[in-house]
Each structure stands twice: as structure tokens, then as C-alpha cells.
Length: 116
Length: 112
Image (cartoon, rainbow over all chains, first blue to last red; front, side, top):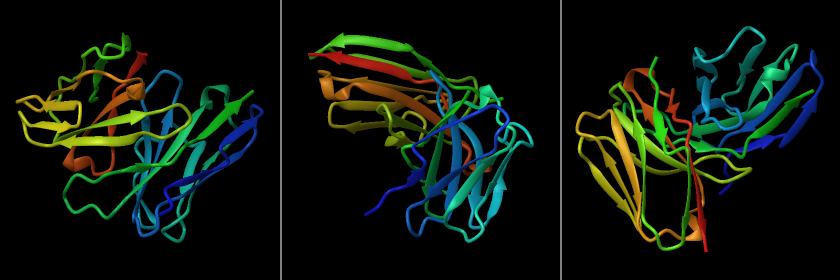
């Protein structure tokens, strides 16, 4: 079956521009996560959706970052007024509904964002 | 702030050698996961450990969760070039639901 897909795979933009990164989770997965991985670092949590709502957005670094999941499937991470420090690989993951257990998160290949 | 420290950061060994990588924290986690990540790909889950003192084996890989659930280790026996990659540990807490806290990873290179 299809895994988590992310588009584009690479995005180069200029400082100050707006970008959108898309994530298609595994079909039927109700939970969706966004992480950011900078060079030489582990993934850093940004935001987590359960269905259409953001259950935890405590990892978003500032108000330039925003994510939506209007129909409870595809999600878009939006970054306004990009800065060079936003350059990183943005990873998306999905999992089945949490039931108080320890869910497996399935990661996509990521979108490599470069801000010039 | 909960942090996970991994050591060593880099490890380069010859095929057939054994190795251990460590994941340490001053915080208690309800579970700890180990992932492997290859260049250009997302992390892939290897194992989840939940109970303090738990040991899990996956072929030549042995994972252990510390008794106090603050640390974990990954031991690889007779490493193969195919084991090359970035090994990440990640801690989870029931209260935070989806928020996984990752270490920086151990970059392993196994030379034939």
C-alpha cells in the first residue's frame, strides 16, 4: 500500500517568500504530525492533528508557521515571510487513532526547503 | 524541557564488529522508540520499548530500556554494510500524545 507522500520533494525559495508544503498521509490514518529536521539534528516536533483539528501546536516556532488539515486527510504546512533559518527538511508522519497506547508513526520522505 | 542525548554522534566500524549506541535523559518517558533513517528518506521505526528493563531483539539488533525508563541502548552484533544509517531514539509521554522527542542521532558507517 501507499505510504506517506510529501510534495514537493525539494523547494528553493527566496527570503521573504511564502511557501506551502503538502502531506498525504496513509489512507485511514486519523493522526498527522509535522516535524522539522535541521542538518545534523534529529526531527523536532512542530504540530499534531487528530482529524481536522490541531491537537497540539506547541512546536510551531512562531506565527509565521501555520498548518491546516481541512478534511482530515491531506495537510498543508504554510510558512510566511521565510527566513534563511527556516531551511531544513520538513517531515510529515501519520498514525492510527491513539488509544492510550504507543502508536507507530509512519514518516514520509520529507520536503527539503532551502531559503536563499 | 525534556532532552534525549545520544552517543556517540558518529561511529565508523568494519564489517563484522559489534557496537553499542546510547540514548540518555534525565527525564522519565512512558515509551522509547528507535528509528533508522537513510539519506533522503524519513525515519523508519525499528522498535518500541515500554517497560523498564525491557529487552527486545530484532535479528542482530538488541534494544534495552533502562530500569528507570530514562535511558536506552541499541547493540548491533556483527555489523553489516547494510546497517549503515542514522539511528535515532525518540521518547514519548502519554500526556503529550503525539509529541515525540528525538535525540540528535548516531550516524553509523559500516565499511566492508
